[in-house]
Amino acid sequence: DTGVSQDPRHKITKRGQNVTFRCDPISEHNRLYWYRQTLGQGPEFLTYFQNEAQLEKSRLLSDRFSAERPKGSFSTLEIQRTEQGDSAMYLCASGEEAHLVFFGSGTQLSVL
Amino acid sequence: GDSVTQMEGPVTLSEEAFLTINCTYTATGYPSLFWYVQYPGEGLQLLLKATKADDKGSNKGFEATYRKETTSFHLEKGSVQVSDSAVYFCALSAVSSASKIIFGSGTRLSIRP
Image (tube, chains in turn yellow, red):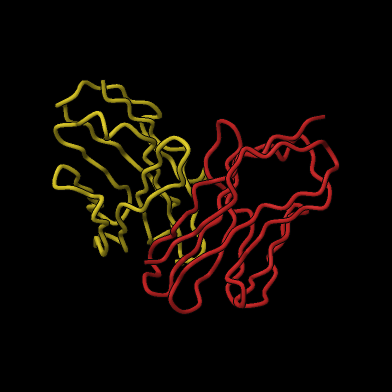
């Protein structure tokens, strides 16, 4: 087991384009989280899945953001019509319990 | 709402110095408390945790004690090394929302040889 895997590591896109990130959690983990981290700040919670069910979404997750975890394994986070303010590190984490989660290395998004 | 406030950085110390990074929290009920560390070029790693009042979390020479009376969870290490240079995040997992972790803004620590 190599931990939480995120792809791509870096993404550069033009404003208005759509982007999709993938997260592969640790295989036996039923909890999966997405966070966003901007420079000099701590990660901010975006959304949470328990198996394939999306149980919680932050108000930070605007209508342009959508996340899925179709079979309770990997997850995708899509951002439509990207804006410069979406530039950030997008982190995925997984765990078997709420108080012990493991983070991936993140996808760094730059919107030009 | 629930929040975490931690000491602003950067903090620069000489090797073998004593380290304290202050962290206080605001939360309803009794959250679990964590310190995460982010080494240069790497992802977030859990450093230590405490799940109830007066618990002490420890790992790699770092310690933090859950102080309910002062709503604090200060990180300490008796003798820092160059390899401890990283960004440290204090965080809580709230009772009201056990599915998410709320992070402080991070403290960058640099250790001089």
